[in-house]
Amino acid sequence: MALGLILVTFIAYAPALHNGFVFDDYLLITENPMIKAENGLYRFWFTTEALDYYPLTWSLWWVEWRLWGNNPSGYHVINVLLHAINALLVWQILQRLKVPGGWLAAMVFAIHPVNVATVAWISEQKNTLSMLFSLIAILLYLKFEEENRWRWYGCSFVMFLMALLSKTAVAMLPVVLLGCLWWMKKRVKWNDFVRSVPFFGLSLVFGVATLWFQHNRALENQQTVQMGLAAQLAMAGLVPWFYLEKALVPLHLTVIYPEWQIGASRWMGYLPGLALVGCFGLFWLKRRSWGRPLFFGLGYFVVMLLPVLGFFDQGFYRFSLVADHWQYYSIVGVVALAVATAKWIGSRLDERGQHWGTMAGMAVLVMLGIGTWSRSCVYANDETLWQDNATKYPNAWIAQNNVGAALLQRGQLDDAIEHLQQALRVKPDNAGVQFNLAIAFERTGRTEEAIKHYEQVLQIDPSLSSARARLDRLRAIPGR
Image (cartoon, rainbow, N blue to C red; front, side):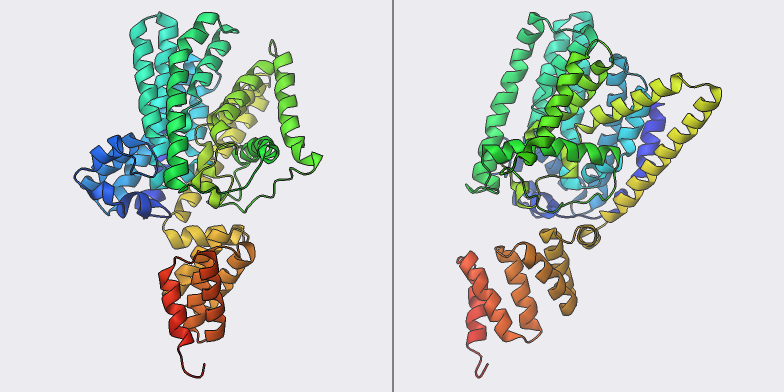
């Protein structure tokens, strides 16, 4: 069964093994001077030069760079392998928690199309690596609970530390541990809270460090989105529903989703959040019967999403408030709940019904596998990635800009202008879009329009010397 999980995972992600680098793979890995530097390991661990503090992931990339350099295949193989191991660990955890259909849930997790955004994207190796250590930490903690041997507690603590050193998005793990104890024992004792204190302490320390790195390094002391507390609450209520929809119906997946207009000024903007709170309130009231698995599964789902609900600013918010790779950790809760529910329904059917239920389950697995295979092909290179994004969501400005830039580089100027103008309609205050459009107009001989957009670039960002130089050259053309 373990070999089956690994084999199916590699089959579903076979196209990804031949993919190239995309998006920020260049910034973080192939063009990162610290990755190439001999003293890079020291700088990742003991300085604040890196964009974020996940030194264990940086160290893995530092080693991988020396193994395969600019060949993306090695990175992809490692990422798919990490994902396959994570699926095995999910199976083992669900088995220990006595959740029905643990192996099947692990299989669904392994081939779910939403996870392509993590597994087929080399930069998101930080997700698969941190997930690996966090799952091991859960397993060891459950072993400690069963045997009451403190060495397992210590090993779990170390694994959690390594998970945080890989990516701090797993900071909510102490809450998950308490949730697992509640699921197993139907209550949480005072000693359980006391034992979780060191884990919460680690989360606090690394959470503060991450906020500092995001503000000072990734965001460069700027704010990506201007949202007050009211808008943050409205967003926090809406985001889990978005991810739940993508987990249950993984259609129209993409890298960058269009910008959201958070309706914080109207009472209807808070309905999704109120509905979410109401659902959990109902599950808690019914916790002694049907509400218990819903509270545990969906509770895990929402808790693991907490870092990306909008309360903490981060660099990716420049492009989108939601992203498929952000639910890599949390989707396990939805998958396990859905599979356990299907198993429960199947157990109450007659032989004929169980036969058709099995066929339906196999059909779902096949569709998920085909979806993952197809989605992996999209990550072949930047052009296929952004073209897919722009086709599905024309209002995703960065996708339109990146497609336009690629067409501009190839000399397809009219097509490039069309995409760049679409990006400009959505994001008129972006210097990069204005600059690309100015170059496109300049190359087509539309000098006055090029001058206009170069001026716009300098109004947005006066420090862009290349735009200043191009503008001065065009203004100096005699008789223009």
